[in-house]
View 1: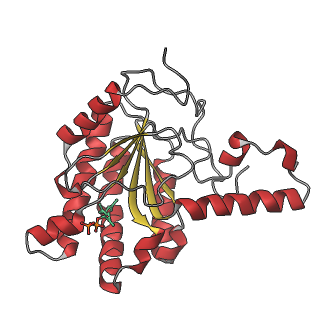
View 2: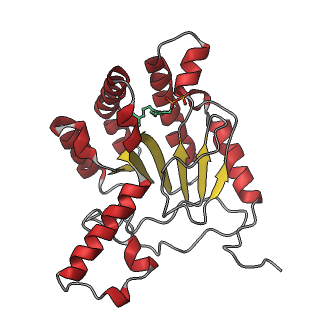
View 3: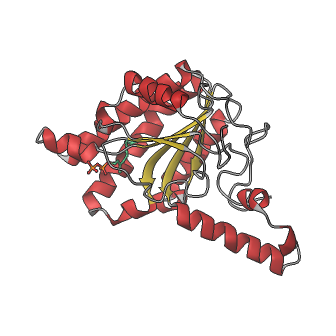
Length: 254
Ligand code: FPP
């Protein structure tokens, strides 16, 4: 059992991918462009983040409407701690506010919330609130919402390697049996299907340390829209683009 993800949340096989033309089972989003959205309006950056939180609401609703089973949102990277103290405080405040105002609604909508990343860096109060929100929504099955907070893909992989090394040193695991499947169980996303579609807004074409292991065969879409402007139409366009892709997983299609 994974040290990082002690409670697997998925009963179904994680590697069965949707058929061509189908709705992606798991959509992951790098929500980029809040700062530029605010700058264009001569507003403080926090105004962009606030507008970004509204886009989060719209996107959750759109994912539910389209029958997407898993939605992962990159809300705060492990590198975001390097931003100016004031902006980190604004983002943390927004997260706290979001938790206090939105969790009941998520629960009503039968959304299950799960956090990946090092939540403890947000302090004991937010850590507790995040865990309470996870516990409250644990039984929900309409949408599995994963929010990446203080998350970095490389550190997730390094932590998994460390946990496996410790298990091997303690004689609990035979190094010869370690393969991609068993390694994946040591990640935050143990038992979560890999993302089928990754959307990054704002016209930036980077992965930025997001789901490095899990994105191996994801399709990427880069809408030229700043995150606070992202709406149901953009979500639909990304799904339509996904449906046109020919996913071969390294194999030939003919
Ligand atoms: C990237 O835009 C966005 C972030 C670093 C934060 C994302 C946060 C939200 C969408 C709002 C809060 C979300 C939740 C779930 C409460 P940027 O600031 O890097 O924009 P820029 O590249 O234009 O400067």
